Length: 111
Image 1: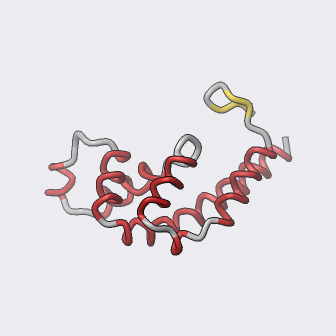
Image 2 (image 1 turned 90 degrees about the vertical axis):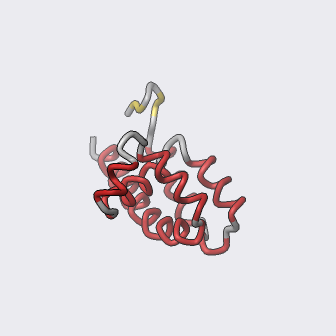
């Protein structure tokens, strides 16, 4: 399977899944959260997911004031302003990403 011109196989996806399964978000300080996001950002768009969730759950005034921002920018700005809230989000979103990776692995294996 090719993604962005790169070959993605089950081994790559399983490594990503294991990495996420082994990360303890609660124990990360602000610097380590940023390092985590930098390490996984090319295959797991954390800030984009966070920004999308924030945008969807906020008021019309918030949406109007951020209508030209990308979800990534919204997510990154919000994460930097409240790292604890971002870590709470990460705990749930990582579970979803692990499930997405597991589903992709199954699809590849069943091809």
